[in-house]
Length: 238
Image (cartoon, rainbow, N blue to C red):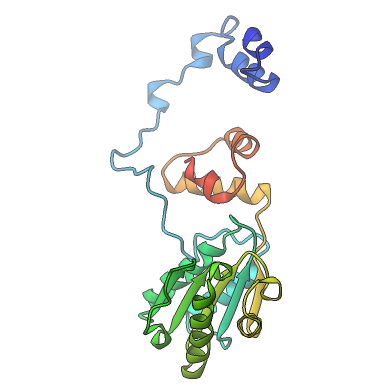
């Protein structure tokens, strides 16, 4: 271990952690072994590879409680606002919220759809007849797409539909057509704030519990200091 540290394979913290694990000379078997009667077996059908579908109920709100409450009201048919714009850095959860809202609306038998925007991805005809359209990453729209979303916004507003949109920046800072950026700013605009480390640790613990095992606090600490810190990446490790 000392040689591995000196050669750069391990840093000091990793050497100490491994050293504590393998330093058995002053321990008895009872101290380092778990009795068979205390071992918990997971069901064979436990699926570790498939992450749960995003819903409003499994979104960790943190300081985004007001936004989450308004989206739940929308899903329940109690929202007056017809346009919601969510912005924030990648990994903050805005895509989760859009997908979760669409899923909640569909469960109430509303016509809702989700579309990830990108240059060359068409805005299909007929979306204007939906109850709700969720457009993710509208800052990636090309010129033709921006025209189509402008027309879609007006058509949805005319017949009482709802537009959910998201991007990395607020509408005023997006490099979009001025008329489209203005329309997107007319509704409720929310920044989706990233979670704190405490929120992320709780999310990891909840994910582990949903899969039938308990996550030790030191494992959460290790992931938060060694892995990428965005929540989707952290959750994908479990």
